[in-house]
Length: 263
Ligand SMILES: C[S@@+](CC[C@H](N)C(=O)[O-])C[C@H]1O[C@@H](n2cnc3c(N)ncnc32)[C@H](O)[C@@H]1O
Image (tube, rainbow, N blue to C red; front, side, top):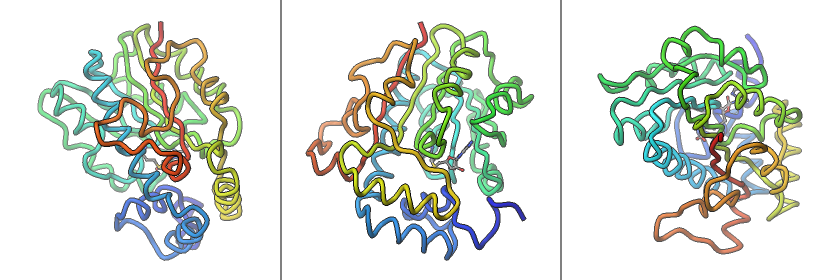
């Protein structure tokens, strides 16, 4: 049994499922998640804000004419999933999901419920090895990389400790002009102690963890055109009318989000 499937090790996807109120988690994940909740009580709010950002940014991409989507770090299925959002707006949308966790693979059937006009598929791949995703035969069957693609890395890059800029560039370099990159990732800018302690807990449980400053997140979009409102906490990215924008909410969520277009 490898690290991802061992039941004596917590795992980020199952902990996140617990934060979202899901049932696909084990005692070891709940114990680690409760430890995080003690120092970061707002992390459930963060997970919800992150999901809602996924909903709004996916609709934005479809409205911008994108019909091919690649979602990396997909997580355990949580309705509505990204393909459901995209295909509700444009049924012909084609969606490829990628995650490195065999547990997510075990749930992949839930991602295959696409429309007749569109297609969805799942590949097991590691964002730190871009070619394991970009060159996967199942990806190239569904996505035409010579046409624009929307690539989302939502609540993913805070599990990559180093080299995030280089690997994001490798993905962007493989995309056609008119493609989009969507990122949402953790920051310690609003609540330094809370996030530093959470980072230490993740690392002590064998899970890579790295928060980033706003400037570091902006840097991930190098060479791309950020769409309005730029890099902001996810609930401030094109919010629906009733979104909370108080400073305490920023600290609960402790993430930055942005969407950018490849010129
Ligand atoms: C917090 S979940 C985010 C799920 C979903 N994107 C969302 O925002 O609701 C992070 C996911 O990233 C995956 N992940 C972590 N490191 C990864 C890597 N190196 N390559 C691919 N996926 C990874 C985890 O397995 C987990 O499913």
